Length: 404
Image (cartoon, rainbow, N blue to C red; front, side, top):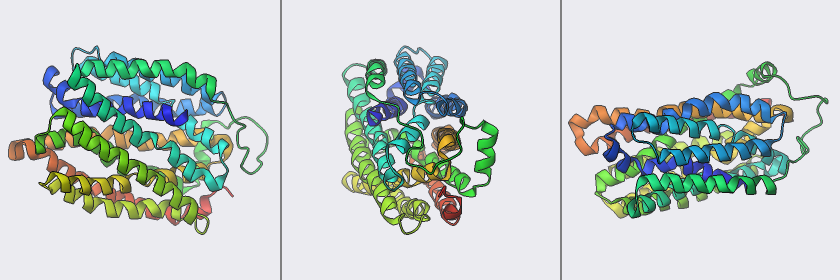
């Protein structure tokens, strides 16, 4: 059920990427406006509300919070289909962000109480299947519905399905005992935010992991939003063709990469906790040149292969890094710590990724025309190198910061 809800989370989050073309044509938007609507509008409240909701989830029922969040973001996703101009769509996307602020950090905490430490990287990796599954479903369903009917129906259909799922989730997911697999700690309620910040302030690895994830997410969110437009413009593909081509890359490559990262972390992490950060560092250094080759390829079958490999490598960080974040935070502040991690990651990744790529594309359009997105993506690949460096630095501190 957690995977299913996370899948709906990413359908609602990413469906706008495949629908960007029809939305741009009907509402007369620029690439910069598309980036603002797809990224900043969502990120504003998603990041701002994540920490207070995390504090609440360390004190109250995490399953109730997730149920309310699912219903809220799904309702606003349906409202996106009623928008008549840029600002109405922008505000509806802000509402999606408000709902999704309560959808992920509580789930990380729940999973950490369902599974012992030596299984958490794999468990969190399996939960993270929701990212490629939801992204691919958003691309495939969005493209199919928009082609068969229109882009508005795609938003409404996805939103109403999420609303219907909310009560089923609440009835089927139980609240586990907090910290049942973790070392005993003094009894008491969850600490205030100031104490959480002081605890995390003594752990440099937490911040290096957070900013490393934020840096790679600039590229990750930028690609998932803009690649459908890139494939359509560069290879002259229709909406259905783009959705099938890119949707299969996201699903196949994403699932392999997410599972591979979690499996490697649980296996190699037994010998060295530094592996939780070194695995994604190596993966990003390998992914960047593969993406560059794919972006410059003029042959569609070769492009498919060149994008499939870095799609897998680019998501290998999820299991290792999410598990490491759970282990550097004590159990009674784990949801809040996860929310702070997500605040940094998503404010940087979602807030900058889509709009930055759109802004660069608009600036390059006078020189490169429809190929401007190609060079915008090439510039963005530098964020993988920055992320790899931050994760390597985190690996040098993980052993000291780990909650034994």
